[in-house]
Image (tube, rainbow, N blue to C red; front, side, top):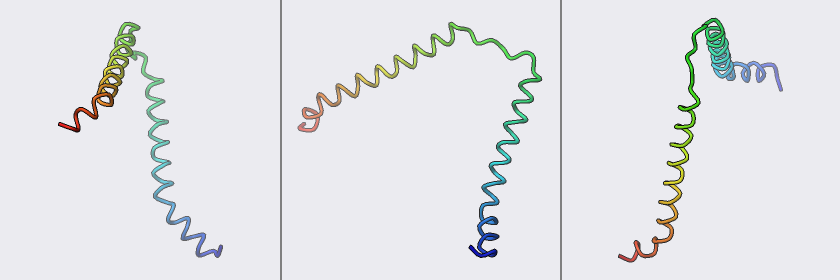
Length: 79
């Protein structure tokens, strides 16, 4: 690869590299802010259980709908 091609390749990758560096810098500064912050709040076990149950219920309902749609697909398409 010629020096011009190497320079061109580096120049084309520059926005990608700058964007990646900006994300890393933002994440590092945010982590530092979180370390300095003493009061983070409290996630209750009850809240976690409720969210897990709600997600499981939504997945179960979607599975039932998909199963019924597959089962009655023939009947629905003929009418």
